[in-house]
View (cartoon, rainbow, N blue to C red):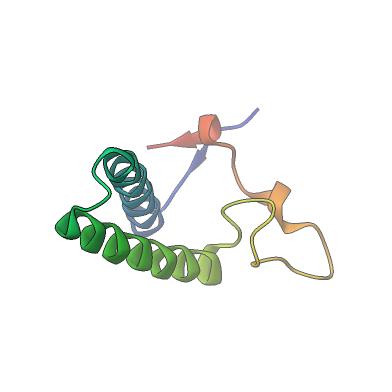
Length: 90
């Protein structure tokens, strides 16, 4: 298993996606117990929209984030070419 270095821009984009996903999950849990909190709902909707945008941009530039994402190449199985999380050197 070889370690792979990730360029700073790509790593920053990936960290942004992880932060947005964490925020969306946290807000989802909060809204489960506070369904009428309009401010939390607006923040959730904004976060989900931003997350979708960031994921699309990442996948267009670097390839799929998940095996089922739309960023696939019809000529070969692109998913396996990305380094696994434990192979990335930060």
